[in-house]
Amino acid sequence: MDIIDKVEMEFISLKNNISEKREQERRQCEEEERRGEEKEWDEIKNLIYQTEKIIKESMLDATNTKDSLWLGALKILWVDFQDFSQKFETRRISYKDAKFRILYLKEQVEVLSTPPEKKPKQNYYDILGIKRDASSEQIKSIYRRLSQIYHPDTGSHLGVDGEQPFRKIKEAYETLIDPDKRKEYDKKGGL
Image (cartoon, rainbow, N blue to C red):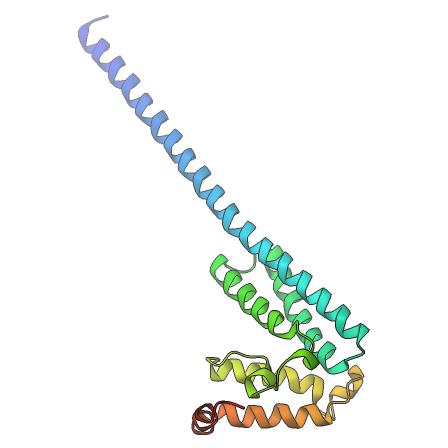
């Protein structure tokens, strides 16, 4: 074996070692990335579990107290929660969107987890179950959902007598959706 062949063999050996090292590093990076993604999805699974527990306990409380209005509002959230859970399980939703949706649902569930009679006097934000910084889109969305349950013409099929609550919901919506009325309402302390 002459020196050129020897150099060529060493070069090939070195090239193979470099290729093996790169492949090993690539596999390590992929494994670390996979573990990071699993950790993120596990965080969402934990939030789903917590939210589901709160909804189920609240629905049981609402059923036991025979509060159809409270139960109706919780049923809306349950449907949204089930829809989200299904998308999450099939991974038809990005991590970012999944985290945003579950945190939003959990927040709504926490607001509705307290029986209405235990809550202090409700303001328009409480009636709609939203935060004070809710956007117009969020206000419209929750109003549509609540209308499906409490509107006297459509809510009766759910066994909900919604005439009185619907008036409050409509009044809250009309005030909060109008920027000028909302500003005035907030100035007065929102009660």
